[in-house]
Length: 111
Length: 114
Image 1 (cartoon, helix red, strand yellow):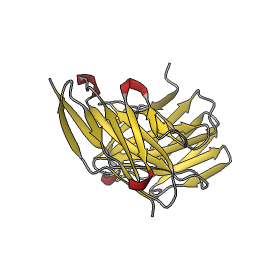
Image 2 (cartoon, helix red, strand yellow):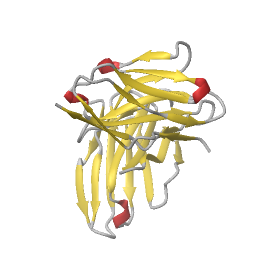
Image 3 (spheres, chains in turn brown, blue):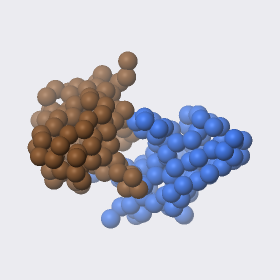
Image 4 (cartoon, one colour):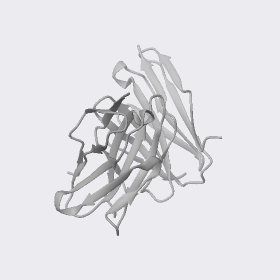
């Protein structure tokens, strides 16, 4: 079984809809991250969490919110989706904040 | 601001040829350095990392990278490319001492001709 899982893997939604992307990990890491990937831009950090009570904004947090329900679970929400949030979203975990381990990604399309 | 530059957006090589992917970073001191690979439809897999010590590091899948402080570079190499190496490669750095943010380059897409 994969150490970092993301659900759903693909999602198409309409402008204005609320959507939640979920991430679960079995690696036992305290640190978890959400990134979005756009062609030619690499990965950009949306939010990160060092433990259940420690959540921080990344460089592109506007329009997103997160919830760390447990050490193993970190969810990303789009309160009102817009087309420019169409992207590939990755969850990652880390034991120390240095090397990170990525999930398979969620491809989100907002029409 | 810290940044990571991968000058080559696309590279095409023939199977069996050698490969070098370039990466330069902008930071006053030596960061922690990483190379990740993303195969089509997959997440990112860590190829190798450099924290300190020997400047030539070995990774998985036959890849190696060399850290050159004078050039602020961390280039990825493979002596003989296989068709399965076709993927996108990302260089990344962590600036130690802060909240350890991972900063990615824009990526280099590698195509392999038979």
